Amino acid sequence: MEPFVSYPFEEYSEEDLKERIVSLEDVIEQVGSMLPLLKHLDQIEDEEVVSTLKEAIRTRINKIEESTGFESFVQAFQIKFFDNGESQRPPLAEIIYNLRSDLWPSVKWPIGKQYIYSNELEENYERLTPESNKRIVDIKKEIDKIDAEIIINPIHELTIEQLLNPVRSPRAFEFLKLFLLDKVIELRKDENMVKTSDMNKVKNNQYDEWENVKYKINSQFEKYYNSIYSDNKKNLKLPTKIDCRHYLWKDFFDKTIELRDQILKISRECKSDFTKYMRIVENDLTDEIFQFSLLNNIDAWTLPSARQLQKYKGGAGLAKRINAIGLEKMKDLYNTYIKDNKLKSQKTWNPSEQKPSTSKNIWDPDNLPNWGDEIPF
Image 1 (tube, rainbow, N blue to C red):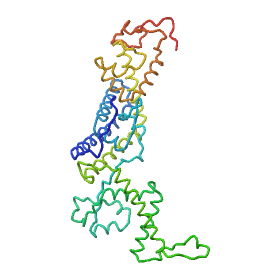
Image 2 (image 1 turned 120 degrees about the vertical axis):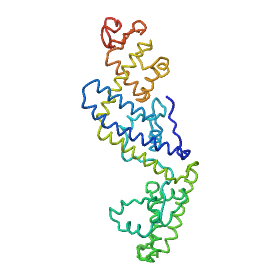
Image 3 (image 1 turned 45 degrees about the vertical axis):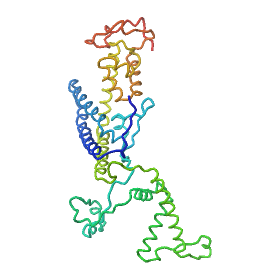
Image 4 (image 1 turned 135 degrees about the vertical axis):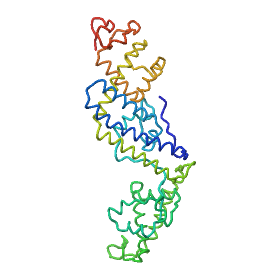
């Protein structure tokens, strides 16, 4: 399997974004269509129907995992998956089992736009009711109610967003609040909002005026601001082929969130059904690999490499399915399969000595080679 290398967002063009959005929409639809199939899988015992459902689910998973939309989703949520020591695109199964609802896309630059609304719109928000808080302005439809668009330098805006995040620097956040307090005092012209005390004079109950400390607040806040801004200016990589505030970026990241929610729905509603599906797939695959190895004179007691499998007709498909599960996990499954079915002998056996008929069950005792007097495990 080739190492997973994602396509950096900052190199996306407008065409790339449009294509990825379409792909994400298709992936969302494919994941959604898996829900009823998985629920039916646990309710049906007819082997032929189960086989049909299993193939329909596998077809969808293959399509999802091969899509550019899935690739972008993995990149947006910074999902890491290592198989056999190498970074790989994670199988959908791993994401279904491990995705958390508190994960959000990692957006490296501000993508929203800031607007000054008309008095009519602003009055709606000023009510501060739950309903007004949910009010979303459709800029395209309500453009006549927009007084101005505020275009902020993205590095400065990112710096402000990081200052607003107490996790980034708790102390910088404290100084931001003090800096804001000073601006509110100036706005309201009310110095009685605050009083300060010089800790060296507390015992004497002597209080300093606000003017004596706000210089230090402003000075210290400026230091924090400049430090964070300098880091962002050095490290932030902005898109080079499309404006970082283009509306498509918001559409793109909104779609990744919608896909996250659709995957979480499978995890909440069908996790046991999906586990049953995976067991069926894994059991089928281990059996197919073993039979394929016997028929092509490959050592059947250890999991064949992709290179070995691809030498023979049908082997590339098996290699692809192994990769979809993960090489390390597949090795464990295959070793368990050999052990549980009591196939491994201490004696060396050459598969070419006896090839089972494809029309017979490989586990039929009449179809197995002569193991000797006993099979120790």
